[in-house]
Length: 355
Image (cartoon, rainbow, N blue to C red):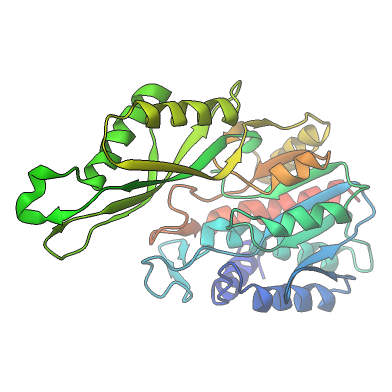
């Protein structure tokens, strides 16, 4: 079977397995059986309760890490029933990041067929919990690779080799007022409107857009709501630290003119990371050029990834994968079959380079 088609069929199988964060056992068993059938000595690494990472120790100081969990369907119909339409495969996790996972597995199988009996020349980590703020999978996995030096983390990067990633400050705001009969709305402050004013103030003070991830306030009852809750996020750019940005957020809350009570709570924070440079970059670029016939361009990953945990453990990291980050987590999530073939060919050539 052609490598591209093998990756495509594998992706369909992976999409069919519901692996929403917290429910990764089935997909881990699938990967475990697949790799053990190839003769790989795959080990389970306990994470939390019945959850576990899958670990494989190769002979080289190179690690490839891929998370296996996805976000929930979130409006995507038949999210776990893969569809192939006009050269694209749709389904939850197609781009984030089961497409890269399928391509990697296809490449490992092809390598095993081409070089029977040879050790896979990289270490592998298939980790859980990436889609949660806790990211327990890679936090624990990093302890298993004290001898590793370089880490390739798979994520949808539009085919860019990301040598850095943006930081972010995620926080929640709660605005509380007194409420009132809706016919007398002029006599009290509406917490929802106060929250909207705060977003405007924050954008002016921080000089960047604020992402309102979730907002909740009021009901269909004929009332001015007593409270409003909002989950927000702002990006942290190179040269900044999140603590300074957080101080500006708190200052904006103090400057907000309102009789309502406004409280702030930090949910998560991570600074901008410029990954350590290494000769691994040249190896990746050469393998890509030899397999795909194009130059591999560098970029910045605009979202948090497991690379942050490996970076803190001292590994030189890069983040790579095809697929649209914009469409990931949405009802549009998909990936081109052609991109699966590109990744599989690249991974296979990389394994051959490391023999």
